[in-house]
Length: 314
Image (tube, rainbow, N blue to C red; front, side, top):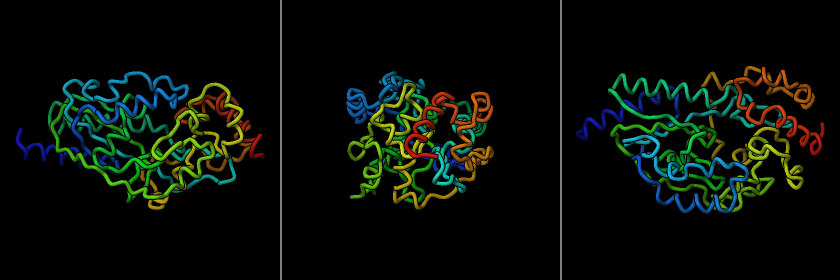
């Protein structure tokens, strides 16, 4: 395939991304992430994944996309904005902004399914798979590698023009495309706002997050009781945490998303403590059926709310 054909295919892929509402699309060659192997191994050895044992699985596949998709040639990285126009009252129990609307996993899966269908319609038979954050793909590394931003000191991918409130998804496909392979400049500079603001000191050093100390880990991933020494450090969060993003100066450039599925329609943005406390297991199952908030289950949410009431009050 000649260069002109490859450039034409690349333009089609990027146009499809734009048409489906993705804010950015970057492309990298599907290859082994050699530089990340040692870093990932050390992070796991130090136990920074906590009880998230799934992080230990598929080590080789996390580093090599060709083991996930046979004959893979390109990794297409997609960013989808979720920054909301309407936010919660700051004095209420807080949930991460990404959980305001429908579960992003389902929203992005539907978009990437259409993406692959449209690639096949416009280019021809292409084999590949779509991945959101539940798969063994180093999403932030691929986003940086394809020039979509830099990995900040809080370990989130950041863009100068739009901050960091976006989801990352990937298509790994057996299609030749133009590869950016851009080394994105780090614009964190001397800023340490995210490190200074983290109540649990989960950002143990610039660019290194101990996942086992993160508020998001405690309120979502951890199935057992929250360790006593951290129960009074969760601030007012009952699902996830946005602190390190909220304090990031680059997020002053965040703009409200245009994705209907991310708009809150349940009224939870107006919930006060008593409203959360009145949710029963039955209403939880119904209310959050299509929400990421179902992840910690009713028991986990009540545990988190108990910590909130104990430390923040009514």
